[in-house]
Length: 151
Length: 333
Length: 120
Image (cartoon, rainbow over all chains, first blue to last red; front, side):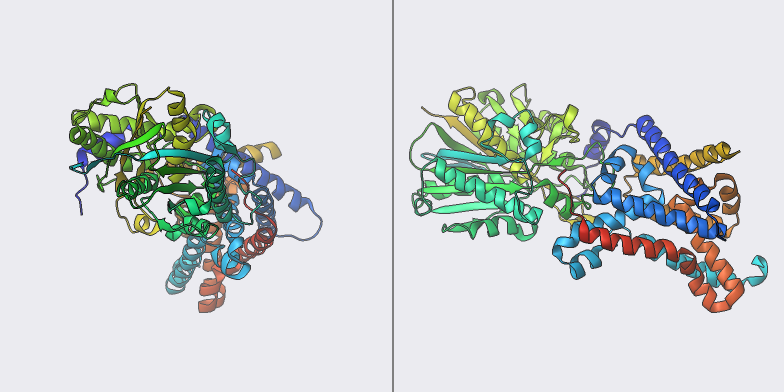
């Protein structure tokens, strides 16, 4: 086992090109903003639909619609081009989560539907589900113990 | 004759070469030099893995037709690629009735197979050997990185795996280009852990091999018309030059990198340039060999470079060592 | 003023994405780690009661980013625990997130069957 060559690693840090902060941050800002505006527009549209949707229902419908749009864009090979431009702008919204599930599913279908597509669907996004559900259970139990503080 | 790890060859010649490349490589600056340009990188196959195998088969088949050799004329094929357990080369060889040795040195596989083939031929027991490698962007991407349709931003350090296959036929029959000498590289690890920064992983190994090549052969860098590393990329090449200069070898304008040559970095959005097992093999088979036949290059040192890692070793936090072997070609007639 | 809502959504959503981009640029984090980080931030902000204010201000700008997904998980767990005791504490989070998760799984399954990876 070689010890890391500190002098070389410093040279690498100095010589290798860096991400361009200004451009990438600007792109992430406006694309992320636009995706959220699409969400806002969907919210407005679903709240004006007659029927008694609660605000939670509206939010859920908006989420489902965004997921569907992302899945279609991913299926046609467009979302990864948006992602190459937008970076964080297309990862942080729920569309980025949907894209990571759909792209894994597409990628592995050639290894079969059961062992390829289904078992690899959460290859990238699995940690999100695991951490999300686990943390919600932890929160639930904490609330149960300290009920008084939250009621 | 051997000095250090540098071997001199006598009577090993390049009989012919063949290269098949995908659409992006065909659009690049070297596009017109490749024998076959393919429009569809899937080649009508049902997966990219099968497409890579088809690239490899096409290159070997084309090489045989071009040099008018049949399968029984070829004594051995030494081939490799980047797929798990080099299934690419192995499954390619089920199409041919030719003895096969599988080789793996990541992207330096091409040099490994050339050196092995040259040694077999100079032993006098083998007459004609094919040495070939293949790689494919879409198979490498899913194996080492992420699904193709994932909307990830590539870091500016990333390189673009070349979709191609290159094959070279070596024989003991004198022809214009000879394999003159080779330096076998060592595994060099300077502790780089970033799997996207392949250039920095491989630069120390390339510098080590190049410096040892010159000290052991007694030659000077300006002896060669072209010194070409495999796939360090633009920034990796700069690092390599700095490291070589520290050890007393100054590389001038005759130095270039196959990965930097094969793509146009300005408009092809490939990060630091091309990479992959077929990067050096297709650039040598397509561009360098043809330039040597034309007499534009008389002496060429090819130094394919490889980063020795797997997805598991990277996830477990291992640093990524590099390896590079140098092979010298000269016009003899 | 509906346009003001859009502007707020744009600014809040964009700001979260800027944080994500800065993480990508400076830490070499991959998308899975960024998504997990935002999700956990959402859970924490909801628990301390801050996220309600962000949601009131940002609208879709606060609910569309994955951080909003985290906050709705935590919100569901808190409500479930208060209303249904232990069962609510365990199931509340996933109940709140169920429409999104079910949609993702089903849609990805169907699209995965139909689509193929494209030439890059």
